[in-house]
Length: 301
Ligand SMILES: Nc1ncnc2c1ncn2[C@@H]1O[C@H](COP(=O)(O)OP(=O)(O)OP(=O)(O)O)[C@@H](O)[C@H]1O
Image 1 (cartoon, helix red, strand yellow):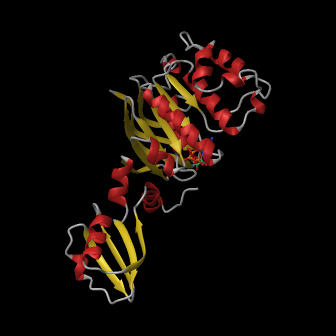
Image 2: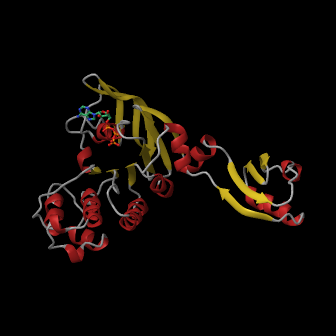
Image 3: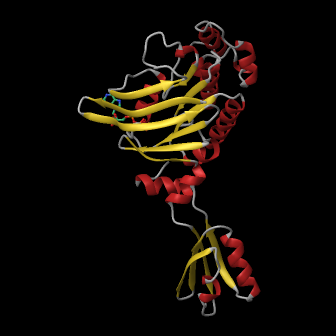
């Protein structure tokens, strides 16, 4: 079942075009990544999906309704964690969950959520005294308290240290296990590669790619690359006949092989069989980060 359907979305702020004809669909249970450089239009797109902004043109349907329409009932069915979310400094963790729960007709049990998201020990701690990772944990719990079918997480792990970021990824995986559809706006390719079923890359307000992380990597970036050195002159024909190999370049003692499939195994088997002694063997497998750089010309943090 399609949870989000966006067709030809346009949004400008004065003269500035933020979103310029974006279309995509998200299916139930997916973790859908929205990636792109600063100012690409990611937040504007998810704000239109969440009903926080109205598009200038195009159609947005979320769970079959127009999120910008008054009385769509989507507020109960969509959870949001906004970029740079904040709560009053003195509001305690338990109070925040109770407060949010009171806004929904059939909320989840705040106590159960505190336990489930590892917040029970922090129940009486004021918001200002939480670490970055604890705050994000709280925001995730708050986005789930209404029992949503869809959650939108905008730059959930920006500003977290690598350890807290990985903890937060586990939380997102647990949201997915509950069958909740997730839209994840991210700057981190490693995060998208690990969590997302599909990713959409936006640049300059337009979709430049939409695929699985593996599909995007496979069709966007150069094939795998293996590099090594040999002390004896190297005969490129030793490897060029292998069906995994696309090219062999010999420059002095340096050899570079590109290709696909199980390239490393194929190459090292031939080298071992021919008793070729190599040094400094390195294999570079393309990542989503490489694909992102190829698509947008920018590097991620
Ligand atoms: N309220 C606003 N008023 C004017 N311009 C805006 C407003 N919000 C966003 N913009 C502009 O619209 C463009 C898209 O912004 P948006 O926040 O959607 O991008 P983003 O991809 O989420 O960026 P970031 O990764 O930096 O959060 C940018 O050029 C931004 O400066």
